Image (cartoon, rainbow, N blue to C red; front, side, top):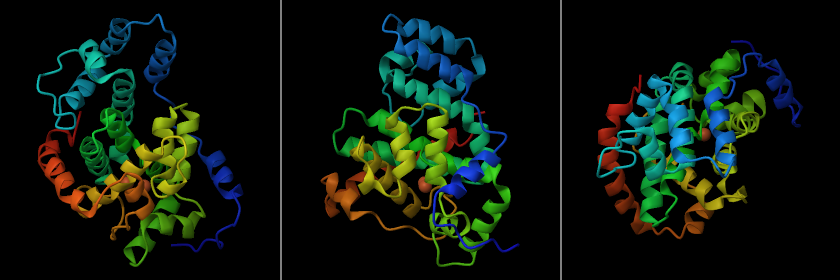
Length: 285
Ligand SMILES: [Fe+2]
Ligand SMILES: [Fe+2]
């Protein structure tokens, strides 16, 4: 392992690294198309459904997730149009995006896909306990929160090796090791990816701030839920977020959500059966 220069104290390093990333993952064409269609108020669910259904492999992956333990639907969703009506445009778009980047997540880091679906399930469990009507959207934010790690692993492999070595030597969290090696962490790479892909703030802010939820301003509760869910799923040992340690929960996030210590048990009661049945989407291929 080669030693790096001491971390720089300004943001030029992240900009420099981003310029180095040549094989920038492009936003899946279909996601861009759906976004354009959804912006048009004249677009109907069946038109969007027809577009997604043209890609049979993608549709099958989306339906597999829509029918998984994530959403706990009482009846089977058998078509994309039905998924659009039941789950809504934003959720289906998030599932299309997730299906499109699934291979990338799988290739980046062993256990990261499981961590992502576990965080999604935990986000849904916390949102359900809080009685939120946007639980499905928050769940999708949980699914995509660590996409910055995918960029790090696939595009900056030498830095990723150094980060992993620091984590393995003990005593530091993954994002702290990223700061030591890069002077920024995957949340900034996630922010950049979200901007590059023109993702909505409901996904971008939790990607950017899930380790600093007290800074969120646009969707603070959504970001706080993803933060809490990220910690819960690590504590449960489901998947691999790249850490040997479990970071502490931000008390500001916990209190902002109005959660009490006694809420932890009911969250686990919702979550545990979901985690047990998520095995069916540990691969969506
Ligand atoms: Fe993270
Ligand atoms: Fe995470």
